[in-house]
Image 1: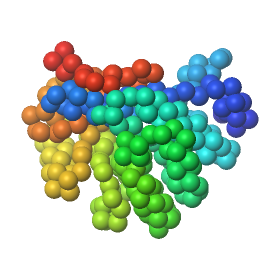
Image 2 (image 1 turned 30 degrees about the vertical axis):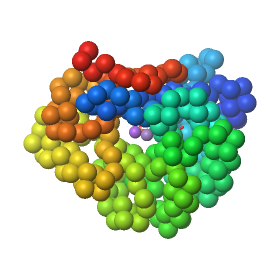
Image 3 (image 1 turned 180 degrees about the horizontal axis):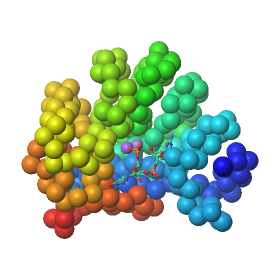
Length: 249
Ligand code: G
Ligand code: G
Ligand code: MN
Ligand code: NA
């Protein structure tokens, strides 16, 4: 079990870094966005997954500090990139619910000079299970800055569609678990239906977890515009910022 103290020391020693994974147009290969993913390289234990240390940070009341470090790093880096590339940062429900995130966001945007329209905040549907009213209020404030809201892991959590009417959502990321089940008649129907929903709502759809060339081909044949996954690019410190060669697949 990770100790909160150990995590605090890691923050102080700058052992927490950020890796970037491209999200690309599946027709042209153009990189439209990169997702910022927190990384911890522990000097003795090696790589520790954010799935573990985000929870440690939350338990130890350090989620604001972790969130701030990642947000600042990501916005600073993205401010140096071509303005065709957006940056998405993950936000845990606890961070949103704390109520302190909008002020932190405003401060980091000002300090880094990143135009708000180039930043997206990825949240999972589960933020709407508890404290729904608070979450909606915070998300509306974030939207009012011009920052984009993206629903992550769509279709696996609390998939009430009603919040699509309550907040301005800019994009959906359909969870990797769907793609992984291809080929399958039901899964194909679900992905096509979500694609139709996003097109009619005039928001974008990202297919997550593209690993197989057959899955990429299916997505392209079915007109799914954007995708992310190890086949297109793994998270790394220096991601591609122009085009990914999809013909290579
Ligand atoms: O990058 P990886 O697949 O190891 O991430 C595992 C989980 O940790 C994913 O659910 C991802 O969304 C989450 N995660 C990665 N970086 C961050 C971050 O900066 N903040 C939060 N809250 N979660 C993150
Ligand atoms: O929960 P979220 O969707 O933010 O999770 C992002 C995590 O998924 C990242 O930590 C990233 O490392 C991981 N990931 C991204 N693409 C792929 C992929 O193609 N396959 C697998 N197994 N994991 C992926
Ligand atoms: Mn995410
Ligand atoms: Na994701």
